[in-house]
Amino acid sequence: MSMHAYELLKGRKAGILGQGELQAAAVVVPLVEHEGQVKVLFEERSLNLNRQPGEICFPGGGIEPSDMNPAQAALRETCEELGIGSGDIECIAPLDVFLTPYNLVVYPYLAQIRDYSLIQPNYSEIKSVFCVPLDYLRSTQPIVQELKVVLSLPEDFPFDLIPGGRNYPWKNGVYQVYFYIYNEWVIWGLTARILNNFLTLLDRVEQSLK
Image (cartoon, rainbow, N blue to C red; front, side):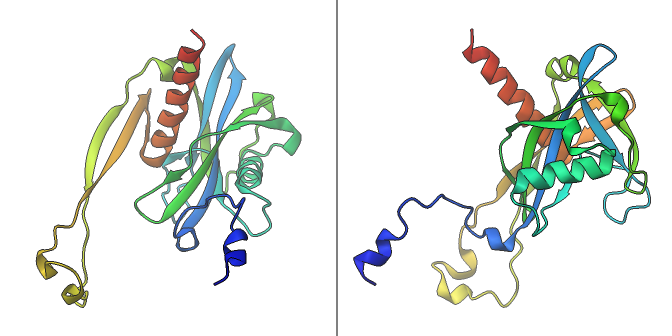
């Protein structure tokens, strides 16, 4: 390969190694003013859905080929699920991209819904929506549970090609699961992880201004 070919890589932006093997989704952490307070809106998934029925989540979904970028996918899905127009929601900032241990990459975005009264949930996907005061979430310490992520190797794995063979010292991973409780609602898993990231970023920004 000539040096000219290497030069073609100049200026490229880093992606995620193995990204083509991952499912990609985008979600919105929606802020809305309701009852005189800034609140975070959550969805309770319909009980008729095949995947994760009845669980608490943020609006969002898979990234379609027609989406120009993950942000567009997140806003499109949010508008569809909450029955609002594209002019009724404003994207504020991207949050941190989350790569899960189960081959899913999630692009979260912080956004503001202009008016709570505009929300008309799509009940084919959503059983209900509810809001939690941002101040409550910021003052609440989540329950955190650590899970071990352990490799499960197939019998036909080529152990003869690696040092130590079957005795190779594989490393296990650790996956933190977060739980936030508000009234009868339990916000946990991926949704709680994204929520915790948003709250942490908010605290850091405020601390930097002091």
